[in-house]
Image (tube, rainbow, N blue to C red; front, side, top):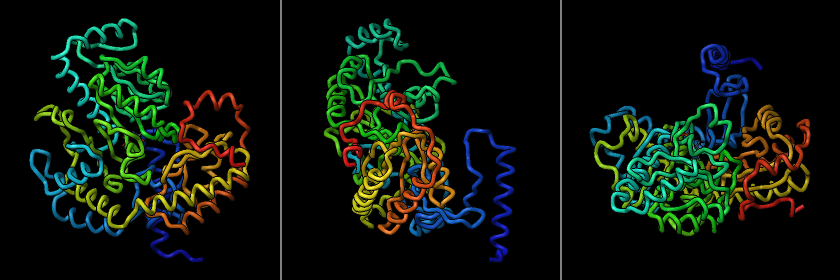
Length: 459
Ligand code: PLP
């Protein structure tokens, strides 16, 4: 078919972008030669006019898909009013957005950031500050802190304040120094050492290890209720409950990293709402402003009031344009009953994936809930992701072996069927990589979560 002028221009622009990217961008991502020019709903279109079903959603960002009319309307309106006024002044949307986030989460107050990693940084600062203020009142903490520093596990603790931070093995919390310090994966951390001291990793879902490492020198424990980059591993209810108990006992902050799994993705507003006990601090980002950069730290009292003027800040965080868009995102989730859609589509997806697992013996396990699902293979997932892209399907592979599915909340039953059909073709047609020795896979994985759904049993 003959190309229109518009199609020719898009193709030319795409080719130029690929050349400039190769020549001028820092080499941080391995990308296929595809330039996405636009999207609509759950579909993206590339510079050659090819259509793709998007089951990655910009890595859990595009929760309302692409070019959602409600978001487009608000962005246009606010861009014509005021994009930025600085945090030295009020804007019409920060307060109302904070109120809505507090209602969704059970937290009391909010601080806005530009990204997930910045929200993590702020949450760690808040926890340290709270502990510092508290430890002025307590002398037992300094003894525990020095006992741990003696073991060489961390930690400058000036004045004996409580500074240790616990995170989980297999975690991912971001790329800035604080967030990287609580990210367990060696390949992300090691090239940048030395990192922030005072961090220790607890074995995933291991209550004994948690008990051994948690004491009065700890100021924060950070948990992804469902580990995302690590391969979609839900934290177990007993582990969460125990972390909650110990955090209360030692007056430390329990921090839920809901950047990937929060804000509706599990079919609940927050993934921790499946578990007993609220966190003290919650961090969110990815879908919050529908693709515009916005993150937030949500905290309960007395943690929330620890920040006072001058102690923390951000130039861009929480501007009027992004906050208005985020309010529209939350309102859309509520008004369009998207949590119900997530539950319904998730059930269909799971049923279809279980059927595929019965057909393809290299599918090991299905994990996750709502629209954050991981399909672990016994072979490397990369070739399947590439084959899927070639067949007009966008998925991703995390932790080498787990196909990760993060479709938009607006996905329809028809699109779930289209996805399952495409995935079946991909699984059948991809040249199968060499089987990974079981021992290697097992060695890489954290403790199997209680909620993990073993599909092997369904074969
Ligand atoms: N925490 C989790 C659980 C994430 O998945 C991510 C990003 O993938 C981050 C933190 C970092 O967020 P950002 O990339 O917005 O800095």
